[in-house]
Length: 426
Image 1 (cartoon, rainbow, N blue to C red):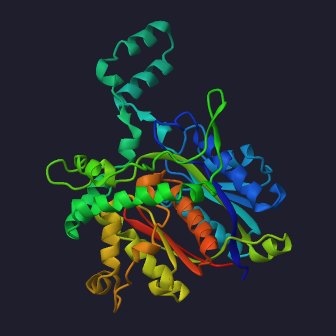
Image 2 (cartoon, rainbow, N blue to C red):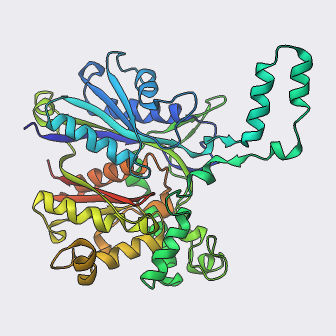
Image 3 (spheres, rainbow, N blue to C red):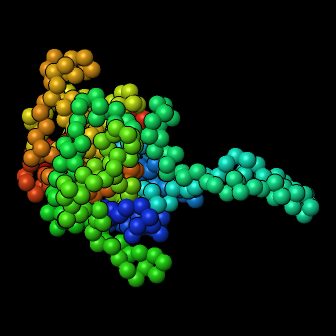
């Protein structure tokens, strides 16, 4: 079977929603990442067989955002493109799908990644407001149109924030932060431990700023395109435990422990990689960043969605014949500090392994010194459709720097899933 390798990639800087990237559309962000990934790959546009991009908040004017981005980025119109949505793991799902295509011999080279403009998730108006607009549109006279509009009341102009609705899980009735509180209570994770993880995320991200810039492409900002953003906006060099301790719980205001400080911010950004057959890369004289060794996804209770990695990681390890001790570097998405700490505790627990996974022994200890070594989503941000691709790209670059043999990237998924991907030195 063909051997899928990750030969290059790039991402935009990440910025909090309603911030520096707020006027950039998902298309703009995706084009920037795809163009730079292609430029770094050493391949020609004609070498690409397919484009797969993850996206959650599908733009109304670009419903298949992958196709729009592919053509706008300069790839031939003959290259097919598809958008995928696995919520928070959409960008990783795109990479896994690309690796499957290459491994099956269906493609020689695929651009894969993810994009999310959380600033531009639309506002939703009540059904009664839409009924009035439809009635006005169907009116056969000016008088009928006026009568339809006369039914409008102030309540019709109070929109539902689409992003807020999207972060609520219809399966369990909780928002994502509340599912984090479920895990904090279940595993007895203190506020202090959560804040300490958040502080370390910022410390590592600010210390690694130069390394992180190596995986980025600057983006020029509308409306005049004269200014540019060169680095992530989220990391705070001056963050302290004292400042974090002053923040109030956001999702459970009476007895909760999760705050905006120990959660990932709502973020805009895009990331893309090029996955190719190892023989194709070799023939083009390209040295890959890493080989895609294996992957897995798993489902679990939506109420405990943050434990997704604790279910997906052992499945990925089993499929590749590895153990957690074999892994040199780990990237785990920091949706919430409580969720990461819960995954660490679950994977180290023999009881969890027996009762939840049907295993005879614990999955293993996650070494904090080999995990999120350049910071995580609490500092960098979590543009949901792009995060899985960012984790994979960051892992591949750091493995190359350190000469690591094996790396693992994983994340939890709203709705009750987890996904993991394993990279190997190429």
